[in-house]
Length: 83
Image (tube, rainbow, N blue to C red; front, side, top):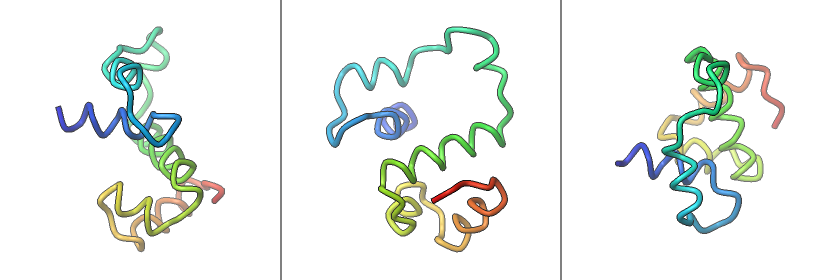
């Protein structure tokens, strides 16, 4: 359940998580191409999504992702994410 809520928070478009966000978080991908992405690609997308949600605030994104800022900076560099 925790993962579902965290995913809904990451995918939410606004400041409030609604029923549609939770339903989208638990929905399976529409096609096999999305379901077959690598773990690295999933991590890349999740980090980029969190950074957008936090308006580029590294400290806040690291807090939500539950990783250190140093780790987040490394992943941003490794994945070539634009902040």
